[in-house]
Amino acid sequence: MPEFPPEPFRIKVVEPIKRTTRAQRERLMREAKYNVFLLRAEDIFIDLLTDSGTSAMSDTQWAALMQGDESYAGARSYFRLKEQIERIFCFKHFVPTHQGRAAENILCSLLIEPGNAVPNNNHFDTTGANVRAVGGQPVDLVIDEAKDPANRHPFKGNIDLGKLERFIEETGTENIPFGMITITNNAGGGQPVSMANIKAVGEMVHRYGIPFFIDACRYAENAIFIKQREAGYADKTPLEIAQEMFSAADGCTMSAKKDALVNIGGFLCMNDDALFERARQALILREGFPTYGGLAGRDLEALARGLVEGLDEDYLTYRLNHTAYLGERLLEIGIPIIEPPGGHAIYVDAGGFLPHIPAERYPGQALAIELYLEGGIRAVELGSVAFAYPDPTTGEIIRPALELVRLALPRRVYTQSHLDFVVETLAAIAARKDSIGGVEIVKEPELLRHFTAEFALMG
Ligand SMILES: Cc1ncc(COP(=O)(O)O)c(C=O)c1O
Image 1 (cartoon, rainbow, N blue to C red):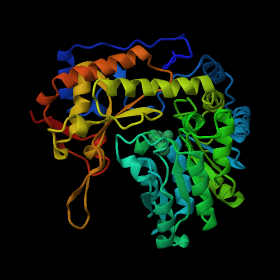
Image 2 (image 1 turned 180 degrees about the horizontal axis):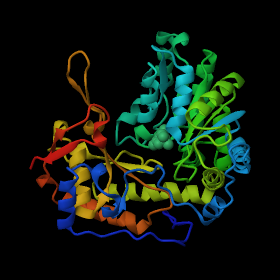
Image 3 (image 1 turned 90 degrees about the vertical axis):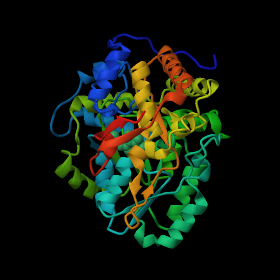
Image 4 (image 1 turned 30 degrees about the horizontal axis):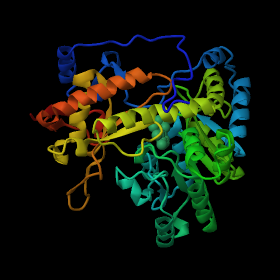
């Protein structure tokens, strides 16, 4: 097998993408107030904004859409999905939801009381927001190695068990409604969690009588990382590894828009009968009847099929290599990234790449703008624009440890030559990087400012 194997699929349907001129992109970026979220998708050549809901479905998934049973209750499509979820995730119950955050919302609103705290390696932003929305406090306990971009720890998504035990002792079990772990760890660079760590975290929280949930969006990518990197798993299938991971937990939240290869969908699983009853009632109120949740019958069909395809070992091996290819080529030309490459995205260390731009002039945003101006590529800033906030008592600005730009790779969408183009674009930016200036925020909303803030170039 070559180091970076070719795509294990051929292209049956194509969607043209548009090349624009530099002059057009300058005008479009100006009109979008230098915020890539405000660009029209049709003006983008390669869109690496997110891997969520942007996968290409297979011919069998498209065919499955026609078999969707749109019955309000007891649809055949629900039972097809149930069979796959039971086979892979092995929990007693599940409810379908329209996407991951709806599953999080139901779980958090049923289990969290004001003043509670929830530990995780790193909460994804919607997970943290759902914990906060019901008066809880999300607490991130990832290992320290995760904070050093060049550290090649094989499981940089692991929870620090010492920190977890101290957190439980100090917080008190009565204030911790459940523990979580995110596989792979999106907010921490798409880094995997080892099987040993998943089990150790499960055992520790269970020892204290605390339930354990997995944020499972990228569970299949986590499983293939375990197969490749953890002793004792080389001969296991991704399915067997997934089953073993979930056997350590009491349930999971799932955004099917990632490893289940669909454009919309999610679910919440649990073993607890009483919690399931309450989740069903909450689902009926917010999402829909328990056999469709927030989804159409055809979505349930595509999801059932996507769960099978998403665990295919050839596909998963290609997927990790596809992402690694981009990361290793960027390192070759001297672009600093979070190492080793993660599962679904490459995170460029924009602060390290543009050291002459201080954090208060947003080097990540400056780089995201340059990627569009140079090559029509869209990526997202994950640094001070997205995460800095004023300390509620002192007003001092608290900044994230790193100023990052995420290049997220949609599944089965772009080829290796698209990735070469991304590398060439970054090489062209690197050649003139000293002339790139910072940006300032000229207008911002109160919450989640990165989506709608307006910027100006500072020269
Ligand atoms: C780790 C993680 N958890 C939860 C979510 C939320 O899922 P959704 O966007 O389907 O609501 C995401 C989405 O990107 C995610 O990456």
